[in-house]
Image (cartoon, rainbow, N blue to C red; front, side):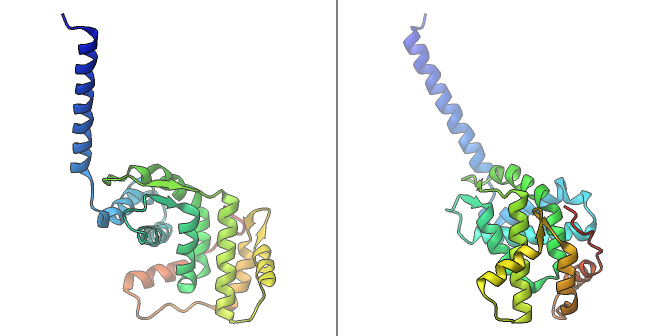
Length: 220
C-alpha cells in the first residue's frame, strides 16, 4: 500500500504533467500576433455586429479596427490594454476624417462595445493573454467624445482659442453627462463634410450613409 507521502508526491507529479499538457495545448492553439485584429473583429461581428444596422456595424467595426491598431503599436510584449488611453489616442487619430455622425453612432454603442472588449480581450488565444484595464464609465465616454468633437471643430475652423475657451466648448456639448447632439449638429452643420474622392467604394458608401443618418438628440 502506498504511503501518504508517496501518494501526495505522485499526485503532484501528475498535476504538473497535466499542467504542462494544458500549456502545450494552449500554445498549439494560440494565434499569431498579426491575426489578433481579424480574430477580434470577426468575433465582434459574430456576437454583436450581425444584430446591428449595417451602417452602425460598419462604424463600430472601423473604430474597433483603429482601436486595435493603436493597442498593437505598443507590441506583443505590452500585455495590458488600457481602454482609456487607447481610446483617447484612437479618437485623436481619427479626428476629422469622419463626419460628426460617426461620434454619435460610437457614443450609442460604447457600453456594448466595451462590455465585449472586457469579456473577449482577455481570452484571445495568444501565447500571453491580454489584460484589459481602465474601462470608462459612460460619463467618461461622453466627456472623451465631447473633447474630441471640440478639437475637431477648432481644427476645422482654425480659430485661435485658449485652453479655457476649449473647455467651455466641451461643456457646451454636454448636459447632465449626456452629449447634446442638437448642439453638435448646429456647430458642425455649416462646415459640411467632404467625402474623399480617393477613398475606396466601400468607404465612400459608409461615409455617405453616416451623413444621411438622423441622430436622435440626447439619445444614449
